[in-house]
Image (tube, rainbow, N blue to C red):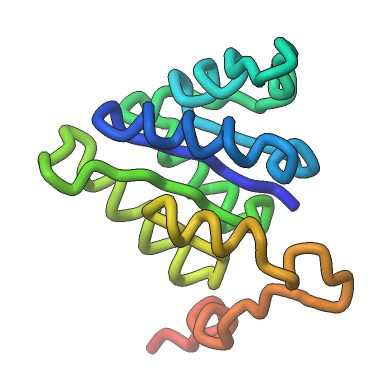
Length: 151
């Protein structure tokens, strides 16, 4: 499964703590992350002194510099199956339009999407995660929109 990890500055520590706690499960998947978040995840050191994510995170641009849009494009291309996005809702982001577009695409393409630790834990531990018969259903509205007739 391809999992995108994003965190605003005010919640990066929380996402890093979550990734460290869940490193055993997360390391079974292909990870993508925006710039600084990706670097911080790669630097995680666990109790045995190892760095389970070193060199294993595909790092994209920083969110405000286009990383959010890169992840959004990957969602639209069906290359991301799950988005973990710890967003800071207490401040308006300078790239709020990008953030809104990213969350809209996650909902539109029906991918698993968490904005907080509890939901991220539920997604990562779901029995459907490793069920080979489970497929993400792309909503019919996408095909209808793509094939609409213009007058």
